[in-house]
Image (cartoon, rainbow, N blue to C red; front, side, top):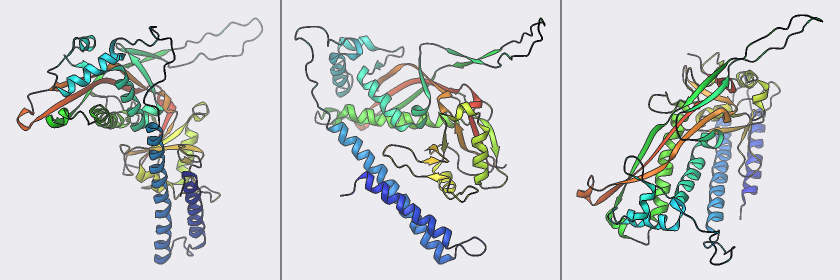
Length: 394
């Protein structure tokens, strides 16, 4: 039986074999013959397939661990004490009432749900659901993992030092030189994001079906995709401002000389980033761009891309972790295709908590009920110099 460790070892061996084949079968002008190219493509496809299988087994391992968790939490306090009493949206009564309301098309609404109504009449999700939905967003959204999330109750102003005081040498008994430090502000607002899921009346009536789990998965995937797109390429109009925004996102560190990326340009991008930011830096790019970068070598003939050796650890490019997103533009003229920096300077402002509402009449004719989840969120890169971007030549 193959383990994740076995597969990683096999992938590393396959990748080393592919590199050796490439190095020893180049023709005089540095290319491969048609026959050798077909062999190399098969070897590279095997490396990619092993990587896909590793990620699949990691997901299986995560699910197994989740399913093996005990269903019942052991009693750790004295019976009759109030140490485990939970109130409000965290109480078991609130969670049970929400499930009852969902299954009854919100015709059976308990008074306990009145503790969690939002301004538009929806019902706030139970505290446990909201936490699990946040975990789902973290799992799906690359910038939820790398950025800094902040809970906001109103417009949040973040102070940023625009300039620093400078030290100067002073003659003995000479006059002191004063400089001013200036500050600017980045404001996190809140934009509304909503998603609707249609559920059949028969499914609502089926108590054996995990309705709670289905809604969390459906809402989590939809919201995470919309968030990730906005956090990366959002224009700031009724949505967050993206990390790759032309003027408010990361700084353009390198523009390619041609219509492809070279190893030197990737190296230049790393050293365009100031040294303090490089300590926690990483790359974000598209899968198609990473496929091109994986074939690049530095001046010593060493491949820039290095596969991860430990389960759960990202692959690395010149020693820095690499993350991919379907929303980063692919290689095309004038597009930002590779970001390198400390992504913790991308701040995400979560306003309040998420809420549910049911639309009874809209799909009544086809025997369905629509459930709507809503959240309010904003995101901005508060320090543009913390992220350097490689753009393709226009």
